[in-house]
Length: 124
Image 1 (cartoon, one colour):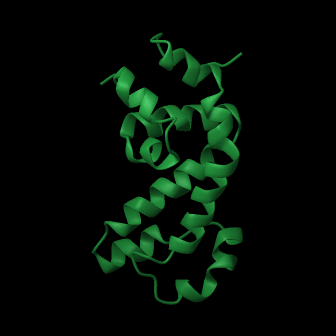
Image 2: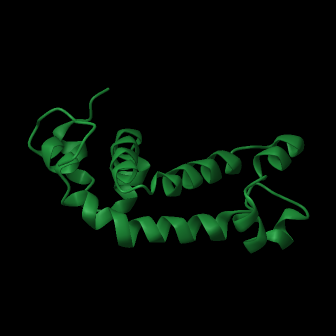
C-alpha cells in the first residue's frame, strides 16, 4: 500500500520513524540502492530477522556471513544467539542514520513523495 502523506512527512522527523515503517524502509532502501549502499539495509534487515528466530539450527545457518564481517564478530560466532550481531547492526544503523539519511531527506525520491507524486525508481 502507498504510504499516506502523514507517514511520509513523519519520516523526516526521525530516522527511527522511517526505519519502523515498512513503506519507509522500502523507499529508503531504494534510495540506498542509488548510492550503492543497499547492503547496509540488507544487513540491518537480516539482523532484525535473526532476532526473531528461536530455532537453534536456523540461528546458526542465518549467522553465517562473509569473511570480513565474520572476523569482526568471530568470538560471538562460537555460540551464535539471536543477538550475536547487535553491535554490528547498531554500527550499520548509526552509519545509515548519520550518512545516508540526511541525503535521503533531500533526494528527489523523498521530495517527490512529499509533494504527492508517484515514487520513481531513478533519481536525477
